[in-house]
Image (tube, rainbow, N blue to C red; front, side, top):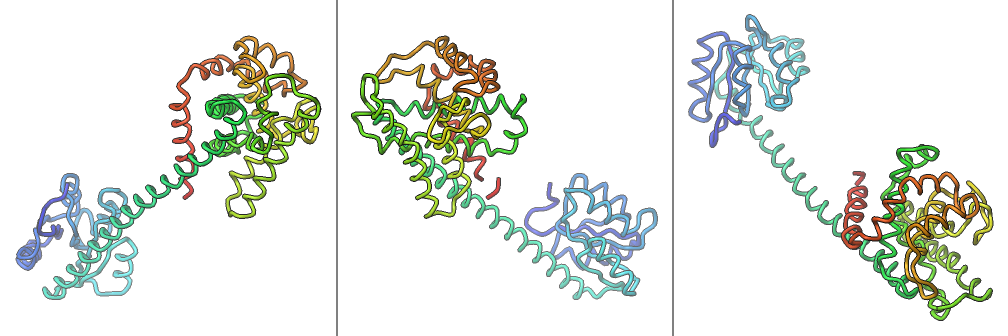
Length: 379
C-alpha cells in the first residue's frame, strides 16, 4: 500500500542522524517524510509501505546504498520507485556506478536544499507523467480491444449470415453450419492429442480453420434452385451442375482476395471449398485428388460434411440414425475417407451424436468467442 495520500511520500535513508534531521526539516513542509538509519531498515519498511521517491545515502555500514538499490530493482513492487543517491563522493566513476544500478539522479553532499528540492520536484513530475501515459495507454488499449471486438463480431455475423443464406437455398437451416464447425472442432481437438497428424495440426491456427469452414459450400449460391431442392435422384447433368459449386466457390474467394490484404482466412476457406468433395481413392471432384494429395483440412471436412448430410433431413431423404451414419462412413474407409481419420472419428463419434442434440446457437456463440480470442494475441 502507499505510505500517504495527498502529499507525495519520500523515504530518506542515511546513517548520519544530522543528515536525517536536516533532510526531514527541508522536506516535511512539501512532502510526507519517513526517515531510517540503514539500508536494511529501509527494505523492512518497504515490505508494508511504498513511497513515491527514495533518497538513499551511498556510504552506509552493513548494507551500502549500492547494495540496497540492487535489492530494490530485483523486486517487482519496488523496482520502479525513483531513487536519488546522496553521497560525498564527487567522482564521475561513482556517479556512473549509481546511475548504472538504476538511480535516477545523484546529489553530492553537503547538498543545497533548493537544488535538492528542485531535483525531487522534477523526478516526481516525471513519474507522474509516466503514470499518466501508462493510464492513457491502458485506456487506449481498451478502446482498441472494444473496436476490434466490434469488427470481429461484424465479420463473424456477416460470414455466418452469408453461409446460412446459401444453406437456406439448399433446404437446410443455418444449424448445418454450426454442426459442421462443431464436428471439425471435435476432430481437430482429437488429432492434437493423437498421431498420425498431430505435428501438422499443431502448426494450424485452429480457430481460423473453424471460421473458414463456414464458407465450404458458398459456391452453392450459383446452383439453380430446381437442382438444389430436387426431392428425387439427380440426373447426370444435374449432378454436374452441383459439382460446379466448388469451382464457383473458389472463384468467389479469389475475387475477394484481389480486393483485400487478408490472406490467411481466405486461403483456409479456399482449401476447404476446393477439397471437401475429394475422395481418398481419387474418385472425388473437382480434381480427382488421391490420398494425402488432398489437404488434411479437406479430408476432415469430408467426414464432418457427410456425417451431417446423413443425419439431417434433406429434400431427397429422411435423416439416418447416428449408428447408420457411422456404418456408412466405416464402409467407405479407404475409399471416400482417410482411414486414419475414420479411426479418429470412431473414437469420438459419441461427441458427434451429442452435437445433434445441443443448442446450436449457444454452441456457435462459444465458437465465435474462441475465434475472437485468437484474432486479438497478435494484434
